[in-house]
Amino acid sequence: MTVKLLTELKAGEKGRIVKIGGKGGIHQRLLDMGLVSGSEVEMERVAPLGDPIEIRVKGYNLSLRKEEAASIQVEVA
Amino acid sequence: MSREEILQTKDKIITHLRGILGDDAETIIAERRYGFISGLLKDVLKKPPIERLTLSDNIDKVVVNRWLGIPLFLALMYGVFQFVFTLSGPFMGWIDQFFGWLGGYASGVSPDWLGSLLADGIIGGLGSVLIFIPPIFLLFIAIAVLEDCGYMARGAFVMDRLMHKIGLHGRSFIPMILGFGCNIPGIMACRTIENPKDRLTTILINPFMSCGARLPIFVLLAAAFFTANQGLVVFSMYIIGIIVAIIMALVLRKSILRGPSGHFVMELPPYRLPTIIGVLVHMWERGRLFLIKAGTIIFGVVVVVWLLSSLPWGVEYASAESWIGQIGSFIAPIFAPAGFGQWQAAVSLLFGFLAKEVVVGTMGAIFAVEEGILGGAIAAQLGWTPLVAFAFMVFCLLYVPCVAAIGVIRGETNSWKWAGFAALYTTVVAWIAATLIFQVGRLFVS
Image 1 (cartoon, each protein chain N blue to C red):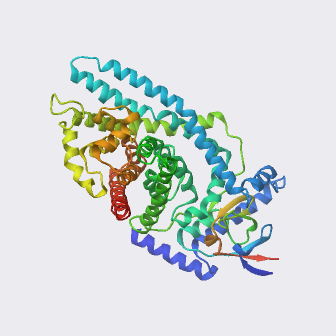
Image 2 (cartoon, one colour; image 1 turned 45 degrees about the vertical axis):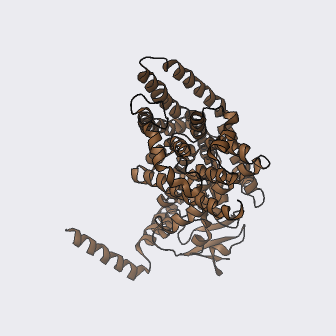
Image 3 (cartoon, rainbow over the protein chains, first blue to last red; image 1 turned 135 degrees about the horizontal axis):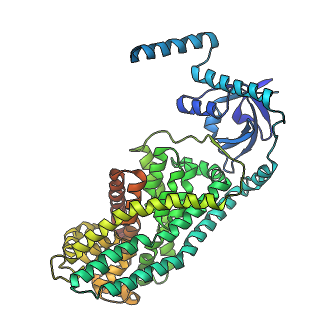
């Protein structure tokens, strides 16, 4: 088990969230969208210009900027 | 319990929770909520959850593909643009013709002042509002289709990097593209932007996107003053508009609209087939508001301009002796540093507030010549050089958008303050740009 930042996952790589950082509104927003510790996430793709990224969580697809994703730590098998 | 006591109790509980669980309250609540949900699902969900919505995934492999994503986005935007403005063209022509015919008929009414009020004021004013119905309703159809099928979120996903760089949001791109057709649908398309400051900035820079109504001015002056490079000069207007829009977005986001940009944590929903009813309901909900809000404001301004052009009693409509002509003569010196400080230019710019293409028509009326030879008449009678013409074109590109656009900004921001600000700051920017071009240009060309 290694802990990585969500932004470090490669397309198709899966991980389990261990910690959500971020402050105030953005932290709350990430939690509201189902990014809580224990959630499985899968990196889907990076946007054509290199930012934002698209992940799969709780059965749906979610996009977020790298600066937002960098506050999320995941553990990878 | 008093308000103070409640707040104290709240803080006590938060500290207590942090002490035993080692995390802040909002995280704990969210985790427990999702824990409860997944526990419940284990009990009640018989069928295993569908692992993949494969069709959506496959579409996305192409639509937000690393290489195809941006070309496809631009092609789709071009498609929307063509759909809206090609299809609305004939309808706008018919509405224009109809009101022209109605105005011609009404101008025969006696006494003369009543005929003029009906023809130039009321019918002209109604026409200037109603002519925007075809592009607006078609635009709302296009936006509704893009939203309902799920593409809108992908478009924002693809463009966000670029727009974020200039302090905006991925969703700001579509309004800017639409502004090239007409600023009104462009400004109205800003409704899809959630963050208030992102949205306001996108609204305020939209008028710099050169709309279709400015094209007649550019074409006429480019043909008269830049015979060899007409296309290039007209094209340069669009580029100048984009550059000014980017600069002003950065300036606004760093000054009066400073603050964090809206986040981009957003669902990319599965693709769905839009329903006709859904699209039409969306179109009507949004389009109806334009008619009510802009209609009343625009109509009022048009009547005021009619009054200014007709008073004092007995003057020829919009002549130098009319009040608007006198105002034009009065403000003309303001434009002297930009090279076009003649009253004829000032009056045509005042009328351009009604609709930008009216600048050309007003010049035509003042010089009493057909549009075909108007460019030559301007060069001969005002003594303009190509440099002055270029500065004038830049001013027309950037200065206050038409009254309909201001009405829509008032409606969309629900604030006269922002509508007034939009009118004022664009004009100041236009004056600075035109003056700069004329003064710097003068050093290089005589």
